[in-house]
Structures are given as structure tokens and as C-alpha cells.
Length: 94
Image (cartoon, rainbow, N blue to C red; front, side, top):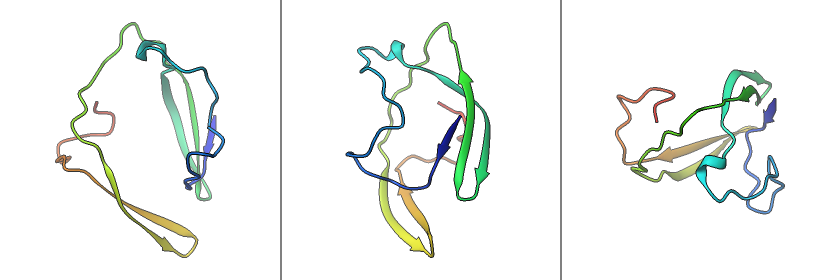
């Protein structure tokens, strides 16, 4: 279970999880989200380890960019952009 606050702390912040560096992508820990719940302005993410027999790799087609961050009271809105056309993409597409 992970609680995720809507804030960015920068490169010097303590990491979410401290694990040894990976020398190959196959060493990664793959998770399956089973529940995502709003708790105030935070997210509670529940999941379990997903054991897969083989990996699926994709081709990086674009790198997104943060165009701006605006304050709305105590909330922040992040305007992100990409050159990809996402109309036909669904959540979970690789």
C-alpha cells in the first residue's frame, strides 16, 4: 500500500523505495494495482506483485514536457504536453 501526496519534492528528496540499482530491465519489480482511492487530496494505491513469464517492451515515441504549473488555492494544476496524438489510446496501453 502506498500513499501518494500531490506534490513534487525534487531530486534531493528521500525516495519512495530504496532498492539496489538494476543492471537489466528484467530485474524490475512489476506491480498490479488492485485499488486506487482518494483520501483527501492524497491517493491510496493498493497493489500486489505481478509475476510475469516474459517482458513486454515498447518503443519510446515521445518525451512529455511540463508546460506550466498553476496554483488554485491549496491545489496545483500541472499542464503537461506531448506531440503524440492520444485519441485512440486507452488506460493501460503500452
